[in-house]
Image (cartoon, rainbow, N blue to C red; front, side):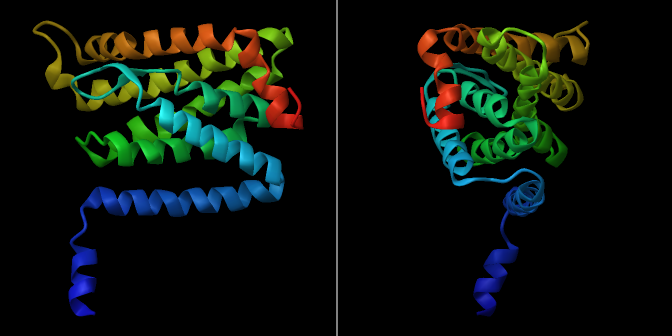
Length: 215
């Protein structure tokens, strides 16, 4: 028993961070559940979007050396869920997706960098749900949600890069300029690809399918 307890204490700090974030995620789910009911349909949609996003994140068109990849529309399911059910519940799903990315593709410089690049950055995709509140045609809300979510994720990734990855900047280049160019080089194509796919008629049928069970 003592040996087992000792092995648990020897776990790396990021393992404890993942555990703490999972506990926080569960607490937030409980709180949000009191305000906005997590119906069986919403839970099923959340699970489906998480699973699809996680699978798509493994299909990489290219990968950057200090983290970040252009994937096959892995942001789209999170943005779609946030638009269908609102930013609050989208935040829970986005943070959960960020935690999955910790397991899949962890790149560690500092604990705060991990928070910025994973649960916070992917959680920011939920802000794309704001598009549902804008006075714009229904047909362009999903592309707008993708662009908004990608923008807020970009802001957090740029902050992380400027603070923690400035040493990779070229001579005469500021850390902020380096971070802007680096993150734009993969998030730009990723967001563009997701936006184009979100404009397809078949993709737009996802929202009513999640909300009402009808395409």
